[in-house]
Length: 150
Image (cartoon, rainbow, N blue to C red; front, top):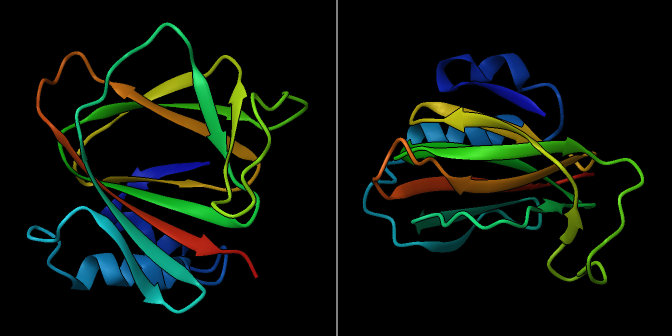
């Protein structure tokens, strides 16, 4: 997992094919009026998901993991807490969804606050979850780029 600010994104361009393309798309696209949903950016390589949400906290932490994609998550508006745990030997809560490339795992997580201008990169060895930031009562707009691993 990597946490940083958008102005430092260039430092991570060489980590995996597609990460630079995702950040360049973010930098060169006005996303303020984009409707929430899923958008292909580079065929079979990068998909952009736009989320507008109000997170709800629960007493059960469910972490998400991927096998075929890297998540590049960017906060546009609002803030939320992101939980992280390294994938080791955790048990899946239900069968892994190969078509949508996600599995849910139960585990304890370390949390970091994300605000506009920040990003996180989650690799397949990184489990993650989002919960409400109770210090901020505004809705969250987040852009997630799904970068297919080659």
